[in-house]
Image (cartoon, rainbow, N blue to C red):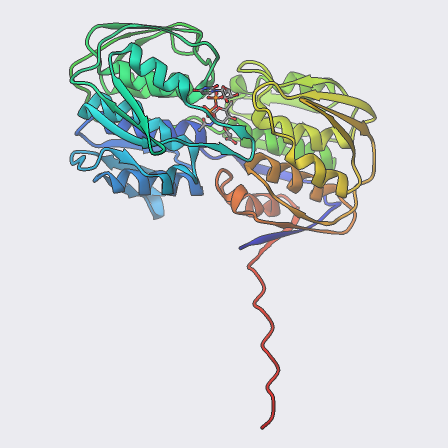
Length: 431
Ligand code: EPU
C-alpha cells in the first residue's frame, strides 16, 4: 500500500492542468451499454475508478480499450456482446457508482442484476430512488440475496418525481428513459454539470433529452442509440482542490483546462479571502492575503459541493476566526476531522456540523486516509504542516485524482509516493 510523504511549507507556483471529471466519465462509460456501436470518450482521467469501471464492462462481455501514448486519456467502448448483464458485489463494493449500469442494462437487454451497494465511509448509499424510478418506467424489480434484479420487455416512458435530489439516480434513469417507449418527464433532477455532460453524450448518440442542467428533464424515448465521440468535461473538484492548495500555501498558481462556469463554489472561497481571477479556461490564485473563517453548508449544485467539504475544512483550519461547516448531503462525511485534529486543528463535531476555530499551526503527523475527498484534505493539510506528514492508504486518493503527487510536485510541493516498506529480514541465526 502506497503512502505519501509531504514536507509542508512550500508555496505552489506555476501552472497545473486539470484532468477530465471522474464523475462525468463514469456515467459516460455506462452509457456505452445503450448501444451496439463503439462509443469514443476523450479526456478520460487516468484514475483507479475508471479501471474499475473498465473491469465491470469487460465482465459483461464488453470491449474496452484504454488509450496509451498519444491516445492517452481516450477510451473506446464497444458493448456489442452483452453476455452477462450484471454487476457483481466484488466490483460494486469497491465503487458504488457501479450501480449506474442498472438503468442502461435493463433498457438495452430487458434485464439486469446489480449488487446493492450498502454503506461506505461517507454514509449510507441507498439506491431506493433508482429502483422506484425504474418501476415507474415499468420494470419489475426484486431485491434478493443482496442483489437488485430488474426485468422489462421494454421500458415505458412515465413521470418520475425524485423525493430527494440524486446525481447518479438522475443519470441512471435518464439513460433508461432514453431507450423507453414514449416520453418521460423527470422532476427534481440533479443539476450538476456531470448530469448535463451525460445528456450531451446521449443526445450525440441519438437520444432526445431536453432540459439538462435544470431540475426538469424531458426525454422522448427512441428505439435505438448509435455510437458517438464525446469529450468529458474538466474535473471541477480537482480544480477546487488545487485552488485550496494554492490559497493555503500562499502560492501563485494557474489552474488550466478547467471550466470556470462549473466552479460555483469559488464565491465561498473568495468570502474566506482567497484571491481568484478567471481567464478563459483557467483560474489564477494569488494566495498572498490572510484567510478568514466563514460558515459553509453543502448543497446540491449550484450550492457548495459535498465533494469540496473536506478541502474547505483544511482551509478553515488556517483561517482566522471560526467557521461552521454543515454537511447536508451525507451523514458521515467528517472522517478527516479527527486526522486534522491530530495535526493540530481545533475542530468540534456536533452531528452534521463541524466547528473549526482557526488559525492553528499544523504539525506533521502520520495520518490515515479514509475516503477520496478526506485524503485530499490531508494532502492539503500536509502542504502547510510543519515537518513531514505521512499519509497512509493513498489508494483512496488514486480512485479519483490523477497522479496528484506528480502534479503538485511540478508546481513546487515537496511530496513523494513511497511503496510499503518491506518487513525486516529476520536475523540469520548461526548453526
Ligand atoms: N440517496 C437516497 N436514495 C437514493 C440515492 C441517493 O436516499 O436512491 C441520498 C444519498 O444517501 C445522499 C443523497 O441522496 O444522502 C445524495 O446522493 P447522490 O445519489 O446524489 O450521490 P451519488 O450519486 O451516489 C454522486 C457522486 C459523489 C458525490 C454525490 C453528491 C458520482 C459517481 N458520485 O454520488 O461523488 O459526493 O453525487 O454530489 O457521481 C466523490 O467523487 O468523492 C463522490 C463521493
